[in-house]
Length: 419
Image (tube, rainbow, N blue to C red; front, side, top):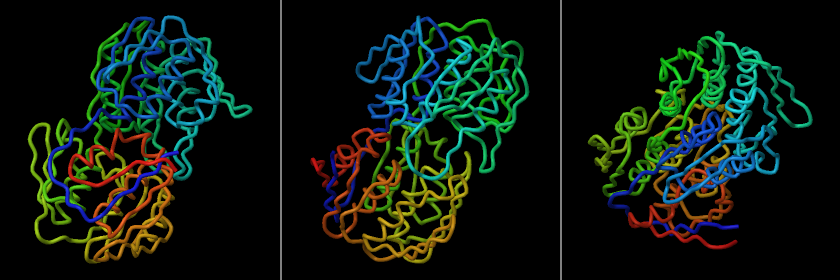
C-alpha cells in the first residue's frame, strides 16, 4: 500500500492540464451496455475507479480495449449480474443497474461500496425503477430488478438533501428504451448529467431538458454505437485552483471548462484571490489580502460538496474565522480530525465546521478517510512546516490521476513510497 510524503514550504508556479471527468466517465461507460454496437469514449482518466468499472463491464461480457485515454467497448452479448468482489470497491458501480434494466429488463447488482462519507442511500434509484415498471427486490446484499417491459412515467427524484446525480443518470439510462415518455422532476442539474445525456443522444436517444430540474425522455426501440469525448473534471480543476491559492505564486489550469467552476471561482475571489480565465484555462494568483469565508454546500450550480474538504484545508491557514456548512452529506467532515493533527483549529458541530485560521500548519502523520479528504490533506501539507505523511492514498487514486506528479510539475516536493 502506497503512502505520500509531502515536503512542505515550497511555492507552486506554472501550468497543469486537467483530465476527463471521473463522474462523467463512469456512467457513460456504463451506458455502453445499452447497445450491441461499438462505442468509443475519449478522455477517460487513468483512475482506479475507472479500472473497476471496466472490470465490471468485462465481467458482464463486454469486449473492452483501452489505450492512451481512449476506451472502445462492444457489449454485443452481456450478462445481467455484477459480482460483489468488484462492485464493493466503488459506489458508482450502481450505475450499471439502469442500462441493464433498460436493455435486458433484468439486473442483479450487489449493494455498492466506495467512500465512507455518511449515509448515501440509493432508495431514489429504486423508486425510479419501480415507477418505470420494474419489480425491485433487495436480498442478501443484492439489488434484483425484473420487468416484462418498462413504461414511461413521471418520476420525482428530489431527496431530503437535494437531487441525486447518479440516480438521475440511472433513470435516464433505463428510460431511453422504455415505451412512451418519461418525465423526471427534481433532476440533478450537474454538467455530468448533461454529458451523459449528450452521449445517449449521440446513441440515438431522445432527451430534452438535461441540465435543468425537468428532463423529458421519449423512449426509442434501440440505440446504436457512438463516439464521445468526456468533459473536463471540474473537481480536479477546483482542487488545483485551491492548491494555487494555498501555496501558489501563480497557477494556471488548462484544458478545463471555466463555466463549470462558477461557484468555486466566486468563493476564491471572495477569499481575496485574483482569478482570470479564457475559454479553457483559469489562472489564480495571490492578491495581497486573504479573507475568511462562509460557505454552504449545495447541489449544482451551488458550491460543490466535493470541494468542501479542500476549502477547509485552505481556510485553516487564513486569518480570521470561516464557517463551512455541509448540507449535501452532513457527516462529511472526517478530514477535520486529521487537519487538527497538523495544527488546524476547527470546531465541529453537527453539519458545520467553524475554522479559526492559523499562521502555519505543521507536518504530521495523517490518515486519508475518503477521496476528497485525501486531496485536502495533500493541499494542507503543501505550505506546512516539515514533512506530512499521508497514509491510505489508494483513496486519492480513485479520483485524481497522478496528483503527485502534477503537483511536482508545479514545483511541489512530493514522494510516493511503499508503506
